[in-house]
Amino acid sequence: MNDDNGPPDDDRTVFMPSGGPPTPPPTSPAPAATSLNTSFAPMAPRLDGDRIQVGDVLNHIFEVKRFIARGGMGEVFEGVNITSDERVAIKVMLPALAADPNIQAMFRKEAKTLTRLSHPALVQYRVLAQEPQLGVLYIVTEFVDGANLADVLGRETADLPTLTGMLRCLAEGLRAAHALGAIHRDISPDNVLLEDGRLDRARIIDFGIAKDLDPGSKTIIGDGFAGKLSYVAPEQLGDFDREVGPWSDVYSLALVILAVARGRNVDLGGSFVDAIDKRRKGVDLSDIGEPLRGVLAVMLAANPAERLRSMDAVLDRLGGGAATPPPVAPAATARDAAPKPAPATSSSSLKYYIGGGVAAAALLGTVGYIAFGGSGSTPPPATSTAVAPSVSAAAKARAAVTAVLPNVTCSWLDVTQALTTADGVTLALAGVAGQPIQAEAAVSQAVQKTGASVASVDFAEVAPIAAEACSSLDAFRAIRSPDATTHLAVPQRHFEMSRLADGDYAGKIAARTVLNLTLGADVKDFALYGLDPKGTISPLIENAAVFKAMEKPGFPVADLGGGKYRIQADADAAGWSGILLLTGNGGFSDDLVATGAGTRSPEWRKRFADAAARGGWRAEMVWFKMVDELPN
Image 1: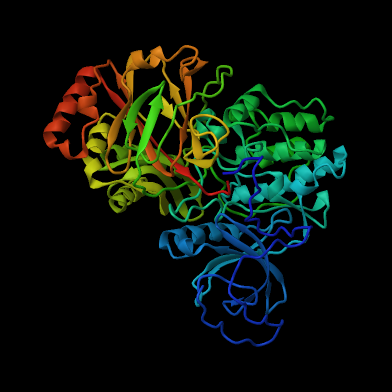
Image 2 (image 1 turned 90 degrees about the horizontal axis):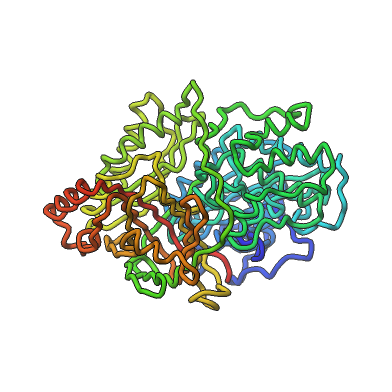
């Protein structure tokens, strides 16, 4: 994840820095560079056998010419196809990623779509390949000489015709991508190149393949926030049921055009809470002339249901429709296109400090004082996209999988994506599972029973959980709240760690996590517990009375109105954490719920089930991860 005040993504595919190349990575002496169209000797063995060097020829095709940049997922080089003399950009995967078969499968699936994209406004992906001698996995794209839009904002003024032309060009490119089911999710000036420095030759880069990867967790950011804080849509920050799709790119594209018009970045960032509140208040467009102002206004509606839902709609508002037809492929369904995230295991412990009291929660790091952020106005009611009379294969698959998940033993899973593609239904899930292979098989069988074929089931965001946790997971899942009922949510699955300026971890590296809690009239009482993948469960908030006592100045509760609360916590260690919410008529007993993993016998499960039945208890659960992927 990126903060607008932090360093830019260094894994840009085709950006050529105007100020000269950065210092290349330290490597052992490189072999002599090969000339174009000449024969060459095999690469000599070397101690750093999984790192490429200037002069290497990958797969006897792509010669590495120059180091460009290093990012969180690997390194980017300029290269050349020695057969065709074409200049290319080479993005090299980290060795830990290249060695993981699950990551390789994910990359190949993404590449299958991206290499089919062809549009003047999109940088062309050439190939995903693996160098057999070094074992490195890499992506090749066309190389574009040009300035990055983020670096030239404000240097030149753009009139309305230029702005409108740029909007049309980029909208047509994204229309082609959306038609193949590729949602960018990170449209920002950093990801727009200006070929020859010209606004009318804007090109979009970095479509999420191998973006923001954590080699230890086999993960890419998804479900919630993925992108730069000032440019992402409200639903990417947790509002509006986190329904991310083509309409999310619509919002971000409007902000990019607004930044070009003003010659500076838009001011929709700041803290995470500020970013949400600024979007709810709406974007001021008073300085933009008509008719562009009217188009941007409907692209920037905070509520996705009120926003232009597709690039087709954007082009229609501009007039004349699309000039370039998109590739022929099934378009992503409005509800089902969403990002893909992911997990891993950890073994550290975690504590929550709530209102000065310590509630030990054996989670995955050390969480300090829970500081609730932002006052703000009452957030708009969550919305969901209505299912059309003709239900898509993806919608049927989502419903079928949701119905079968309560029967998948030793798991707590949620469907985060259901997408109809040319190859069938693509699904992504998040949560935890003690037997992921069996869980994935159950999901595939549920889809097949709807008559649809299964293109892929993405379990990258499903973290393994210890067998000791199975008894409690099965007990909680038996009283799981209906899928349509949500009282507990996280705006994102991953929280980046950085050096915090305030709080218990001021000056230290920690993550600032956020929980959203909704307590409507249907919630008579509740309790919160912390979870970890080893099966440990620890009390956080015993009941509603304890929570209510915090609702006064100096205590850590931010009441947003309408029964909505936001919890912002600081965590100083990387790893996965879970939060369990129990709602009902009360009577929650820490001795019953937060027992040791070794004491949850069949007799314990019966006692829990009896107590849950008496109290009308319902369970909800969320899992998220603290990561340290960016320079601090």
